[in-house]
Length: 453
Image (cartoon, rainbow, N blue to C red; front, side):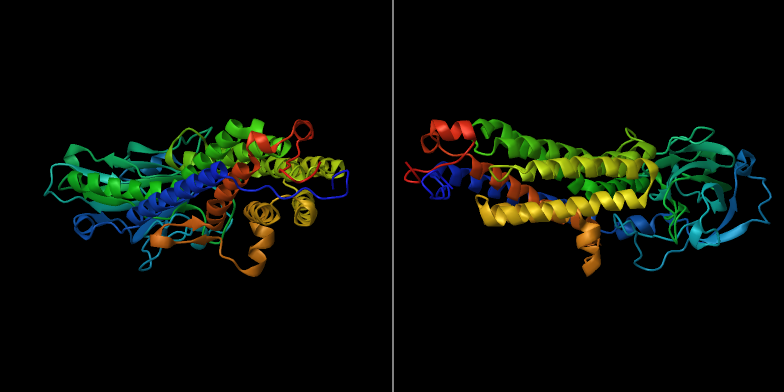
């Protein structure tokens, strides 16, 4: 309400604003098309001729929990070991990326809840009709592995030993010795699962068997595996880039915005969200971040992210409620305690309390905020992305869909809508200079010609 009792008229969309909004929508459409094309390419099955020229090393493997490097030797007596069948059901894939030939881990084969080291062994016959042969390593292992041929270490994922450093499993290839062609040898895989990895009914160890292929075929199959791996996390790279673009938009036009407080905290929240999302791609494509760091960030980073989003949206209305700021900070402290102590109670208090704050803020926006429909829709999308477990699990919305055979999480779908909405909202807060009077600039208010004296 103004001093004369009249409410300011809603800001009009001028030609410049309209151009910004159109540019945002065009950029969004182009990005969606590019991502869909990558998902479609990555989701293609391996070419039939390539798979026909290679050997999937599924079937029975000898298996033993524990750790002894002597088990890599070709003459190790494994007759007393358990047998695990790594033959996958037709059309099976993992529940995250969509990797083919998925089988349950050792927890589904008589070792529920087991964490630590275990070994797999089997004999492999290498044909003599090629000059060079390679093993394409398993593309999904919990959580790291080493691969041996007749006792010789060929390589692996991560670093095992007294102080293991585990990284995300991705496509790897290992050249067999030149004299392996036309011979029969023993392939041994030493696997390790972190003590604090989540236990599931089918967790632990290898989930996809290795492949034996002649070198030219191995090259092509390795590229196909990488296309699938890149597609599996491409959204986790594209969406953070889009979030950074929105931050750039806010920084470029922030001085002319009537919602400076909102933009400051929204930029910080977007930055935290972008880092968290990008972690998925980093740990899946590179060795830059180990799984311990990734797990720690996943358990802790959501707390400040949610808190800053609360502070941002509390400033969408002209007069933020200081009580909401205070409660948000208290809840963030509770969330940090819950994350560090693995306390489900403290975590639940933080999440449900923060969700209640968003409901209060949303009610304020619908009742008195500017651009009510756009702001409310944007807020709802951000909240849905942050509170999927509380809001979407309860109504049966699947956590992951598989368009083109590649896993895309519901959070990624929501951010694909939320980020463009945020960009449009930022653009709409930027008004021509002539529509903002000096007094309004001091108060951060938006006025339009004819809205008051």
